[in-house]
Length: 120
Image (cartoon, rainbow, N blue to C red; front, top):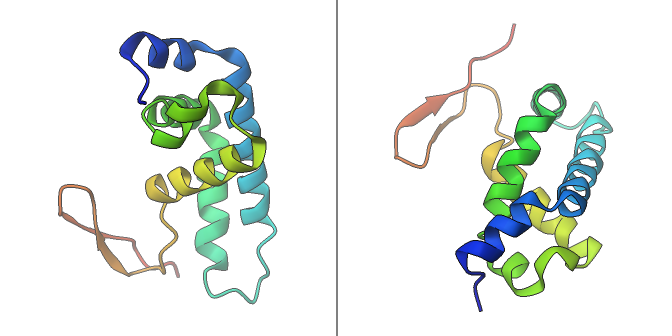
């Protein structure tokens, strides 16, 4: 059963849940930073890790807001299992920060083309 508005607001203000989301984000950033240099998406992953790290507070606020509407988080609440929360956080981060090769065209949620510039 989905959370009602009051429960979602309570979750968004839950500092323990926010800390857990921040930790999951840190784990994912560490994964990105430890990408093998032979990985064809190495530069993109390092850039994403850097962007997330530089704006971590805003990223966590956005993730907590987004996760308060996630069906799996709704079902389990703030005590969701660590492994499950990690997967959901990573999946959500990947939607906000997609790893795509430089110069590849993709679209945003409104169907508008977005081009990542090639690095020299």
